[in-house]
Image (tube, helix red, strand yellow):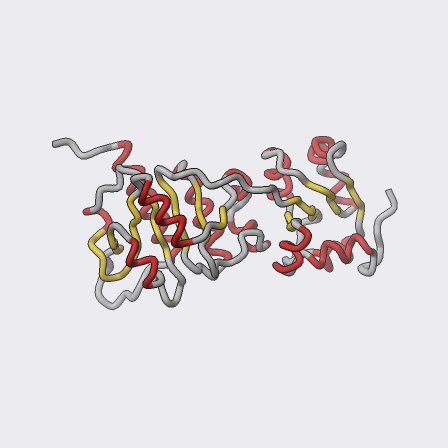
Length: 261
């Protein structure tokens, strides 16, 4: 296999275009970067359209190539060309183009997270990891939230993205649907009651807001409860991903180890 040696190659340019959210949505494709993510995509049977890898990577990871050789095209690219394709400073030798799947209607959660205009891709990625780790039903993205297919979101999940892909929802209608189906909407705010005083054993959707402005007033009006993470004086707030993780694990604790009366 002769390596692609020019960044002007048409396929290489098609990969670079996917750095932009608008192009990802238009083409219904997104990037999967690095050995771990590519391996998780393959193990999850997520459809990959093509893979580009350096000669040294191809020589080492024949097992991965054998798993997907029949399902997608594989291209050999020089190291410097792969660096021009990647969104990371030091790519580990492989990058793939994955196909977006048509989403099914979101299922009503027994435990899930809804984010309202969350902006940081690292926070979203960490929340996805926590959703998978706790066995929660999923994470739902309201308007104004960072693109679920952002390369940093995928990297921040350490491969867990493919086990629980985020779902875009129409924020207020989705909340109203969940309320009508008996799901409690728990919004997080500094002035809420301590989260450990809340009953998280019933179907619950945990709402997390924007890193700077928090949850929008329209969403707060729909909330069944307003909860907070108690902190020492002088501490303004916790990282939003840490807040979501604490709430998920408290819900799991209450459900698995209910207090004896």
